Amino acid sequence: MKKEVYLTFDIEIVTAKFSKNSNYLSALFIAPLLIAKLLKDRNLKATFFVSLSPKMHEYSFDFYEYYLDLLFTSLKGFENIKIAPHIHGRNLPMDFSTKEDRFDKYNDEQQIALLNWAKQYFKKYGIETNTFRSGGYFHSENYYKNLTEANFSKSSLLFRQNIPNIDLVNKEVNISNPYTVNSITEYPVTSVKIKSIKRKIEIINLSPEFLTLESVKPYLEKLPYINMVFHSFSLQTPKLIRENHSNLIWENLKYILFERTLNIILNSLNIYPIYKNTILKKELVKYLNYFKENNDIFETKFFEEKN
Ligand SMILES: [Zn+2]
Picture 1 (tube, rainbow, N blue to C red):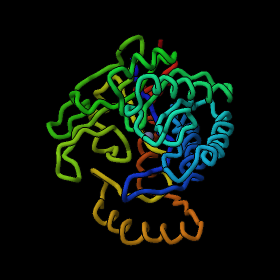
Picture 2: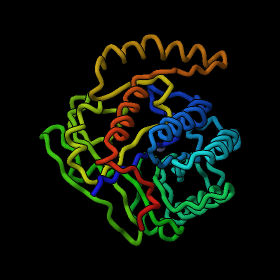
Picture 3: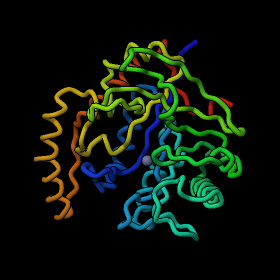
């Protein structure tokens, strides 16, 4: 049997302190379309978890919706892409306060309302969706119950407290497969234990944003189920890079001293640059080429293909 591969992309802007970048045109429209094309050219399927929130206090949902509409309409041409909601709560048009970004900070009733609203939002574009990922993978005690209540049937989160699937510290592989909770099938993101750039032992998600293909390849070949994550904002905006990319210190110095400053100056002039060939884009392409070249071993899937 072929290994099941779920390629998942979180479509959103980056709000982390040093990498903050409000380039919506790139992160929410151009990058997802380029990713869809990179995948299509390699005959690979993927799920885009689209943030329905602008994530920044200063941008309204109405402003953000302009880009959402562009994206939803344009992606219809890609049969290799399925889209699903990704909820960061901030500035969503609800009848309760939505200052909070984290989904788990809303009470059960509010979570169900957010999920129902997301489902309706997708319906406007003729998209029936039953798969969900919360922003930052944050979830509260009744998460699965609330998903069931809102008629979702699939979820895909990262569980940092569980045994890691790829243990780069002890050089081990631990297999975990999708499982069911409260009638929801959970497709866990492949987790990786690493001695991080902060010199701490950390659990992170399998991603070209953190890990070179070379460093994880021997482990991928041992896993029957793989769920990889990549963020749209990493494709063509400069940002801090982490974990085991080569020339990490030099690249980050270049970012902090030069690119970040340049970006702040340009943004003040209303110019939002697009970087053509970021390190993270090059790494993503390596992963995609690898899955394509080894399509006798790996099969990319949509969550909807399984019951
Ligand atoms: Zn997110």
